[in-house]
Image (cartoon, rainbow, N blue to C red; front, side, top):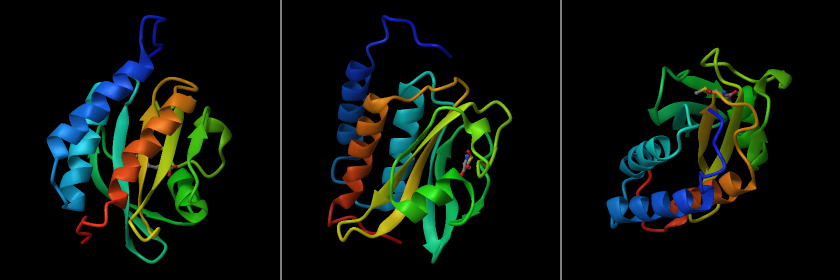
Amino acid sequence: MKMNSSFDKEKVCADVYERILALAAGEMNEVTLMATIACELHHGFPYYNWTGFYRVVEPEVLKVGPYQGGHGCLVIPFERGICGRCARTGKTLNIADVTAEADHIACSGTTQSEIVVPVFDAKGRLRAVLDVDSDSPAAFDKVDEKFLEKVCSLFRDPEIRWS
Ligand code: SME
């Protein structure tokens, strides 16, 4: 979905962030937070086609957590996929064309671009990755990167209870 010039991405980011803060105020359960964040992100941006978390459930293994959109693959070892690469490197990965990435795992045949952001806890341990897919090419820019990193920094709250 190509956004027209009237789409004010920075304002939408600010509005969605405020909604997340209001809805999740005081909530310290990680899964409840992830479910709320996935929902608000997914419904806040028309070019988000799949929005969700993959959680570190055992060493070097990600498993799908709360998400919105079509079926998401259940298990991703760190050595596979864009999500696994994000987990290994601890870096945000903004993929303009997923077909150009040999390690891309296609949960949907319509995905053209993807952004994956690491989720760290208060002690800097990797706990999950946030994965967003789009059916548009090069859907994500620096505004998306900084916004999603800001959202994921909410999990650095030392009061969050990790399961
Ligand atoms: N594309 C991801 C896999 C998760 S599905 O997109 C929800 C990857 O390559 O790791």
